[in-house]
Image 1 (cartoon, helix red, strand yellow):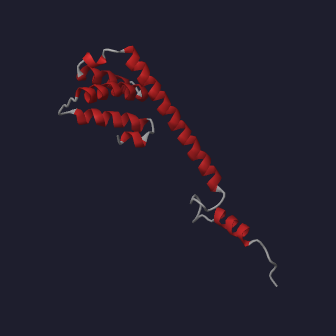
Image 2 (cartoon, one colour):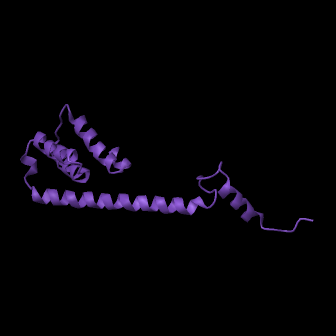
Length: 133
């Protein structure tokens, strides 16, 4: 005779140790660790987003006449930050470029390069969704 037992516990243990199901959501013990890692990554992304927003406000405040500058000068400022490896400042500086473009209803045949460079800075920061904007 087989004793009545809670088979669910045994199945969870088997799933957690089965190499075929290891790392799959809902497969056992890895779920808690995976969730903690995902939460930590989301917190990191939020901190970077907040840092960029603060840098944007700071840059707009420090350069209230930025709209009078040529697009090429604003773009060079942003590129300089990115080349130094300061992607957060680079993204914030690109905000000045795109604000001038939007508010002035401007266009340029090579604007796609500016979009691409800003996307690369976002990717370097791990902000993949923002890179698509």
